[in-house]
Length: 293
Image (cartoon, rainbow, N blue to C red; front, side, top):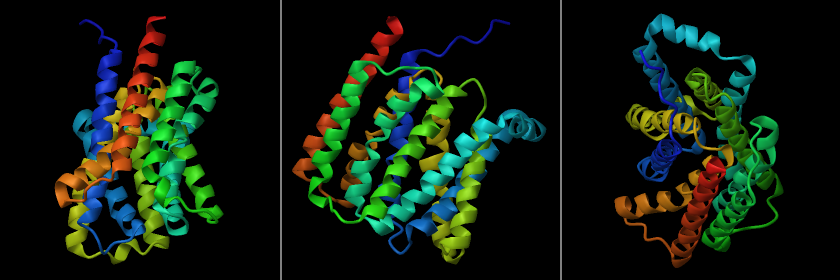
């Protein structure tokens, strides 16, 4: 039997784009859950994501094999993936209660800068000058979109938003560093931790059954499947490029709410979105050139 071929860079990019497409459905799902808080959404979304990933592991490896995959994840990988997923999800919800959504979005756009700074230490990959420029351009695009909603004086919420960006960057770099391992057990564990935290401290157990049913769809569609695709993309795409591509969520999320519930995007959203798309294209080109070099 021939050994499996190494995944191509283009295939990795396709996986990450599909993952971002899935993540960007969060806005349209939330529109159909108007009575729930972020904690309540995270509670059941996290649990259904974990169950979906566990089901996928059992389908692929069998029950005994799935248990073996959980045991095979090294503690540093488990802590980095599960811990930072749970931390980022929890802090994201908390930050939204302490500062504006615009602040959280704008600050979250510094995740590629964190990834570029930490990547040499975590993965041994150094971001090129073009990649740094792409990250800054993408940050500028987000600023154009949200500048009207930016507020000051909410320092604790802003600080938590910084930690959300850092958590996502570290989680991404962990997926990249341990790309040769099956890390879905760690992500499933992270989703379960989110469920427990939201149930204990966010009132998640009070969600009505019909809304739990919708969240049981949201978890697999908007989290589990994208995470599977994102981890697959991390096999051949550098960590910084991964985080920059995911910023397309800022463009796609309003698009789906526009199509689905008629929320017309502003002119700033269109201009900022074009800037972000350009930044993503530049980042992909930089990564492709780096691979050839």
